[in-house]
Image 1 (cartoon, rainbow, N blue to C red):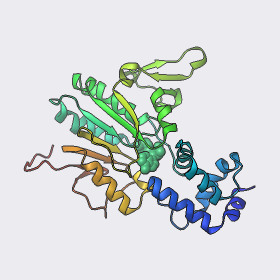
Image 2 (cartoon, rainbow, N blue to C red):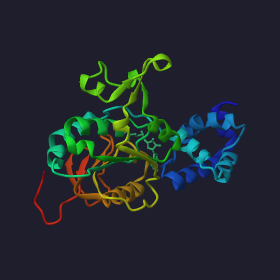
Image 3 (tube, protein in one colour):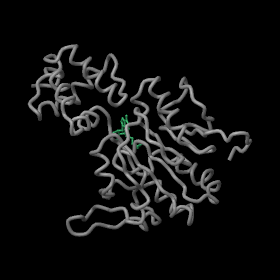
Image 4 (cartoon, protein in one colour):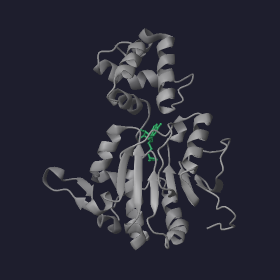
Amino acid sequence: MSDMATLRESGASGIQQLARLAYEQFGLDLREGKEGLISSRLGKPMRARGIESLEKYCAFVQADRSGEALTELIDALTTNHTSFFRESKHFDFLQEVAFPAWRRLRNIQIWSAACSSGEEPYSLAMTMLEHLGPEGAGAQILATDISTRVLLTAAKGLYPEDSFPKPLPGWLTKYLLRGRGSFEGWFQVKPNVRRMIQFEQVNLIRPIPTRPLFAAIFCRNVMIYFDRATQEQVVNRLAAFLEPGGYLFVGHSESLSGVRHSLEYVRPATYRKPRVGAGDKS
Ligand SMILES: C[S@@+](CC[C@H](N)C(=O)[O-])C[C@H]1O[C@@H](n2cnc3c(N)ncnc32)[C@H](O)[C@@H]1O
C-alpha cells in the first residue's frame, strides 16, 4: 500500500491521534499541513509491522512498554541529522570568548542536550582538549537525546571517514583511531575523549532530575520541532541548569524571539545567563 493510501485508510482521526501522541510524548508540533510528513515518514515502519492504519499504530505504540516503539516513532518523525563541528561559529565563540574565561575553572561541565549520534559532544570534547589546556582534559560532557537508538550509535564513537572535515585537519588525528581491516574507511574516537562524555536518555519536555550546573548547554536544532509554549518551557528549564554567566547555544535557524526567558542575547544563536549583580560581559 502506498503512503498516501495508508493515510487515506487512517482518516483524519488517525492523524489527530498521532499528532496528539507525538505532542504529549515528545513535544512535537505536528499541526495542520503535516499530513504529508506523517504519511511519508510512518508508511515504512507501519508496513514493516503489518499495521494498516494510524489508529492501530498509535495503539501499538501506547501498548509497548519497552519504549522501543516510542523511539521508532520519534526517529521517524524527526531528523537525527548532525555533523562534526556543525555551525562552526559556536566553536569559534568557545575558543575566542568562552575558553579564556573558563581557564581558571575546575571541573567544567557542558551539556549537549539533543546530541543525536554524538558528533556534537565529540566535537566539543576534542575542541576542549585542543584549546583549553589541562582544564579541557578535566571537563565533563553530558550528552543526551530522547532516542535510545542514536545514543547507542553515539556511545560507540565509530564514524565513517567522510563524516569528518576533508582534508582531515592534522590536529584532529590526535583524537581519532584509524580503522584497519574490516574497519578500513572508519575512525573511532579515542578512549580518552570518549571517557569525557556520559550518554543518557533525557526527554527535554519532561522535568529533568537535578544536575550540577553547566558552564554551557548546547540545545541545537531540536527546538524547531516545538511550539512556542514548549520552547518557552524547555528554554527556562535549561536556563535553571546554567551557572551564572553560562551560555545557551541554540541552532542558527532557531530563534528565541517571542519566547519569554531570563537569558541575555549575546550574538545569533548564543545566550547567557546573567551574573547576579555583576556587570561582567565576558
Ligand atoms: C537534528 S538533531 C540535532 C543534533 C545536534 N544537536 C545538532 O545540532 O547537530 C535533533 C535531535 O533531537 C532529538 N529530540 C527530538 N525531540 C526530543 C525531545 N523531546 N527531547 C530530547 N531530544 C529530542 C532527536 O532524537 C534528534 O536526535
